[in-house]
Length: 154
Image (cartoon, one colour):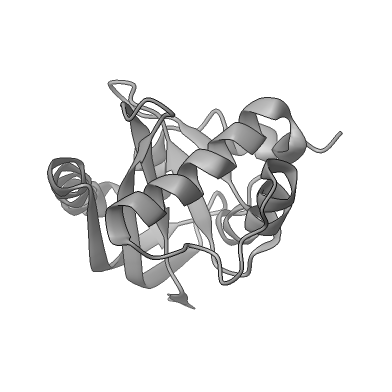
């Protein structure tokens, strides 16, 4: 079974989509599937990169769809071991941390732009990023997620 179809990944996909809807009043996906497995497949194959991380002191990525895996040049096993701060260059990590803190206070932040770096060192600029707090089924924060619809290799 593909890793993004494992029960924890399916649950995370649902939480990512439900939390985005709760914070923004908008659907993350254009026409989301009704069932969890369909939603997980849709989110994984969506053309827009989606990533999420947990609430650890140094948060580790716990979800990345196909577009994100491709952009960051990672496999699923590599992604889910990666501290999320390493998706940005060291000089961009402070700015990224400020944005994540703002999203944690307000529930979400949008219109963010910044430079990111892939596993091989390939740099790219993301535009129009949304970052939001991911909630569990009881409304407790369990991490943050991000998506963006524009990027350009540098």
